[in-house]
Length: 238
Ligand code: CNA
Image (cartoon, rainbow, N blue to C red; front, top):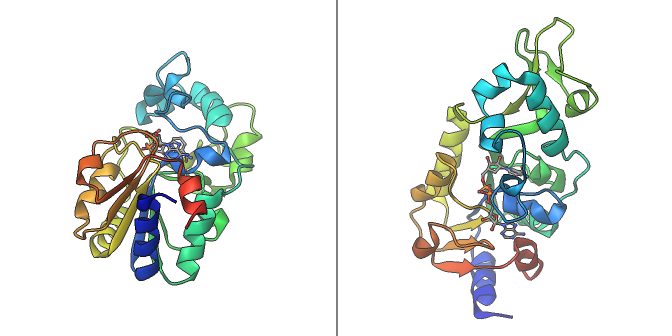
């Protein structure tokens, strides 16, 4: 066992005020590609760049194309939690982890049993009619051939934050509070390049900032402990 793993183990054992902040890299070991790794979505070829397809204006201008992409690439409904998701849920049950703050939209933290989750970018599991607000499960979107429509005729839209859209203020505030009160902040599986989400870790005031990420991030030099390893492997040793 490396000395970094030993240190992380000690910090986790000694604290009952841990917060986890994560991103797409937490779910790659569940078979869901991230955006920016070499095998991520941003390195695949589409008619438009994924940032454009996943934007608010594109959603309304090219709704049909948006849904073709969304159904194919953004709806991993069968994916299962991996060791990282399960371990985080276990730490919450043990009274050690106070919150998970995630940029992910896949709902895998909840599937693993986590209760206190701030979903900064929303969730594919919630979908609403843009006209009357009626709720629809993700299977409704998956099983539609074209643009999913409500019984009232309105377009059904996933509760996912698209580019050009704002984040929920209450979610941001709750996440910022949890991070600023945390004794240990574990950041993992995120390139820390998507704002305002990435800026939230600046609220941390402690001295146990852990970064677990395969690639280098802009925050590596601020961290007290950096582990460049697959996050599932790290958590399997905790
Ligand atoms: P990103 O920019 O794609 O970065 C992912 C980071 O994770 C990279 O730096 C990788 O090196 C790292 N990484 C990948 N796999 C592992 C692993 N097994 N262990 C450790 N590190 C790993 O993703 P971010 O989350 O930083 O960007 C935010 C976007 C991505 C958010 O808007 C998300 O909604 C969006 N996204 C979410 C999902 C999902 O819900 N599963 C999937 C793809 C993209």
